[in-house]
Length: 280
Image 1 (spheres, rainbow, N blue to C red):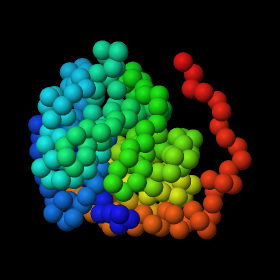
Image 2: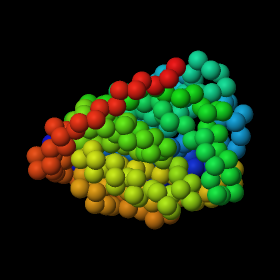
Image 3: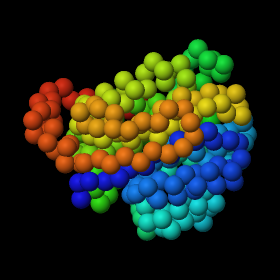
């Protein structure tokens, strides 16, 4: 199956989990009605926390019986759709620092894979928040994750990961034709870098990049950039939202990935292979 309808969900998530889950379900229903077969939710979709304490209190153990995970499983099964569920806080070995975990559900409602965000956003930005220290409340993952889907290999990443090309080169080497990037970009970094980074990652991996984003003014004072987009393996934008809450459904043809790879066989041309291992 080379032709696929993909859906991106763009949200302005609040501090209320129940409201966020209802909003996500409504938008998923709309995307499915418009034909979406694979849906990507944004980073932090179930909770844009007001405080570190609230984030810690919302973390779930890994398991289908827990409320957020149960909701995602129900959506995927009832709508017969694959879902890349943005990120949610999942317990790690550090009680105060859960993983930012992206879960993938099949159309049968089964959680078939997960990815823990590797690169944490410890930076200074010229916005109202100024300093971001994600590592203070999030435990970093360590491994890329490739998911086998009915449409081919899907590579998982989250937001700040997009700045680290070696992760995407791994997915290129693993023959991924789709890469998901659920995100919550700030406005200054989004305005400057969002589009160019997404297009660069698509071009270098010869894959479709599916980037679902948070948008707007959040209750904790943070502003996010929005502009969710689907980018094809030639770097062209197939579909894009602006800064409204909503959804986008785009049809993609995965045969284009193989066509471009035949004409420009960069896997075979690669010379420099990163060898430095991640520090303990």
